[in-house]
Length: 98
Length: 207
Image (cartoon, rainbow over all chains, first blue to last red; front, side, top):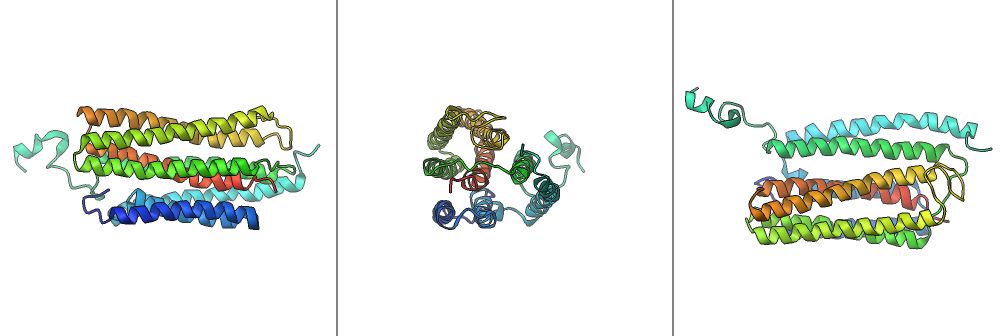
């Protein structure tokens, strides 16, 4: 939290409520429409964005800090996705079926 | 540059201002958090890889487990709120209130860990082991215990850190920035759980 913290506790309570509401929506959506990975991840990313920006107060920090932290982390997390091609290759070989 | 400036502790007065305008200890916590985010990302990807490549992945979580996970979410997100109260009190130099809120946060973490252990014991009682289970792909247990175990280790570590820093702040050994830095860590633990619930619990829900 920087000295020029612009967050009021009112905003914090709203973010707290929204994060919990999304958690409930996630469960309801999973139970009624089925737990699609896309839907689940979109809701989780919204929760994570709110937590990072409002609870961890990254939005109140200098832009240089946001630039130093966010793009590099997202790059690594995106590059990890290169494993999926091999994972799909394995399913077509059905390696765990006797 | 005067000699007086050069002799100041840690080069203060000689060095440029930090481009991020935050204390170095807070920057270190941010760097730890992004590296830990990549660790959790890799562990969750490994889980996804194994799940995707298994033909008979078991869907085991009944609604009781899902509601339990939702309760755990409520506790963890609420503890993120209480740690914010601790930071606010610490910034106002109210040591008693900061200590009280830090301990309430730690209690939330302990409650979360107990609920999680109960979930583990239920699964172990049903025959789930790291490399076998009664339902299907044997690696289910390994991935479940790895992901949730790594997260629970972070929760337990956070609880210990909060108790140490909260008590130390009350006794005057630590400054308010230490409460703030460990609050950052605690929010990160909360953030990881936001991905564990949908990916581990909801995707493996019984249909």
